[in-house]
Length: 344
Figure 1 (cartoon, rainbow, N blue to C red):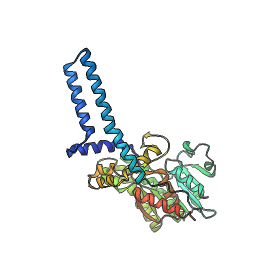
Figure 2: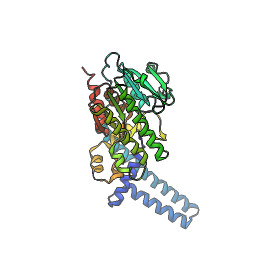
Figure 3: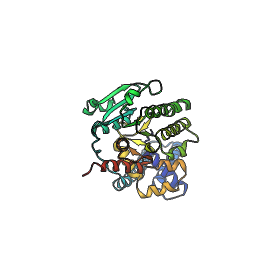
Figure 4: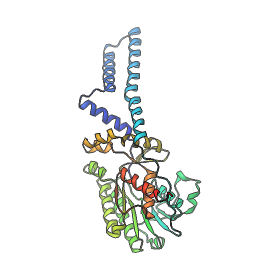
């Protein structure tokens, strides 16, 4: 899965766009003026009172820059957030008694939230991961004691016993970074093995966390080729093994939790929710519709890990329609539909 601190990137892109079209942009004018004044100051090297006077003027320029480039976009984005943010989907309907779901990668960023949602719905959950350890972020939470945390490798081991009697399998396994070969293995071969073993064990459906076509279309031609190749191999194997019961969730960027991360790049829930709301507004969507690939991608709203987990858990329990669910809007809609089943 992918995450990205998108607001700074968005501001840079918007500023660049304004500059390219010679549109009025107070922030850019202030930056240019301050840069020019600073350059002149260094060349002239004023002394004493002149230096102090110039220092005060440059500080005023800096304050004007902050007001025009930071506060104004934040205020506008806050308004967009109120208008465009999709509310939390809510709890899932109770699972039928005795429902068992196996979550591969069930202790990871996405997988642990899927496990939590399934437990809340009353399902019996088995998490299989390389470490077998429960997620650190949920330490001490009651739901963790209701999950069977299992250590193992889907490629090297036989999981027929763990898969037996399962209503569904969810795979949240994925890696980003490293060589193309390692990314093909970590996204492709491992999920192909999961799909084949699950089908052989008689599991009815499989849910897979993939990546949006918008991401691959924008950057797959020059970066992370092994990542996108592996994802496509996994999707093909899952579709072949499960056909009309496969659910593939394909987010762009994912945010959530309480911490920022550089590897993989990810932002916390509050910040990410703010960005999702801003980028979900009509003006930004219209701008994204006319921008070229990588710029349009940066303007797409990210999705909350909680919404993605709700959609995945709902799919495992049969409350999300089979097929490919691509992008934030579709994933939020699937999560809302899954939660709506629980509403009276």
